[in-house]
Image (cartoon, rainbow, N blue to C red; front, side, top):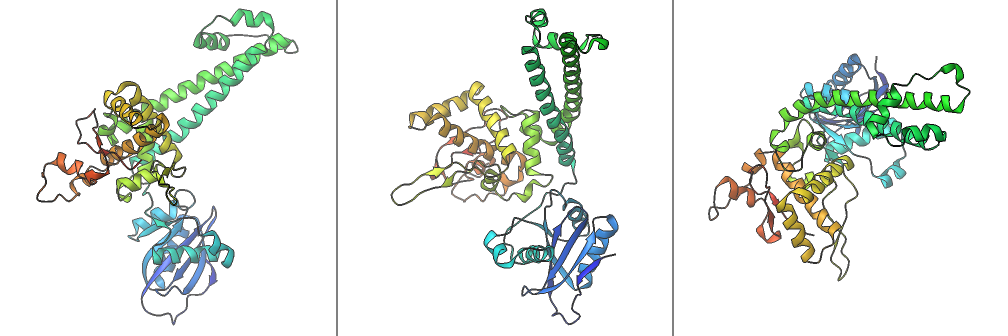
Length: 401
């Protein structure tokens, strides 16, 4: 049953109510505010299917329910977010509250829930949450396990290599010339006598055998996950995979960043900010400059960086662009940052092909699809860098440096 923090007033004014939910592992605290921002009531509910239904029924029993702000839609709030969305309730994700406001008001579950409801009412500090109900969620779950396996394999080989460095000299001389995989398989096939474990050479052999078998087991797990992820990502984003420098790993991460409902990111500039590649203004007085954006999804930023490095090695169009930027006086790092911004623009339109047709074209301009893509931003902002792999329209117009 719901544990009521305060009862809903029966004499509340007629109008739309806005909900807020402060999420936790075992309970969610919900609050309702009216259209003027006054607190109508609050309650706590268990994080079970029945608890979610009770929460929704409680909110609707108080009046006409508008938006509901939920904290942590990607963690503790994922379940209630899906429940509310399935019931046709508009859900917004509430970002971290303002620290100055928190210092003035203090902190409690009810205060946080009321702040989430207020954010839903005003539209401040809100974003459209990921739906987490499609194939992209499957990609996220599989990549999560794969990433942990890759990390564990790296740690295992690091320990294996360090143990080999400090091994007895006779053992080191025996293994010194073997290639990496032959060395690991050779150690995995050892049958040391565990009765002589007190001998340092035998103990080292046992440890190397354990680490070698761990490495091979993790490699097999990673290969199995790759077999599951490759067709899944190929089905979700074939144009993205057909682009120069984009593989299953980077495409999977960019799909996760966009979510099952990529339309929640309203523009390519917003997607660049989400990926942490939008240059931020840092001008003062007579100094006009931009600085590196250290925010956003750092894994998406890493994926764009990997794509940029690959293109700089093998894509002639990217190489020409880098040469042009360095000739203009930019450093290689600055040119790479601009390149990542352009790649983010290209990725956005590959994930949201409908955004190209939504761009208005003036009657005096060409009305072809290619022309519409070029005119996404005014041409006065810079040059264009053509996507040289898929035959897609040129979408990589250069942003301000």
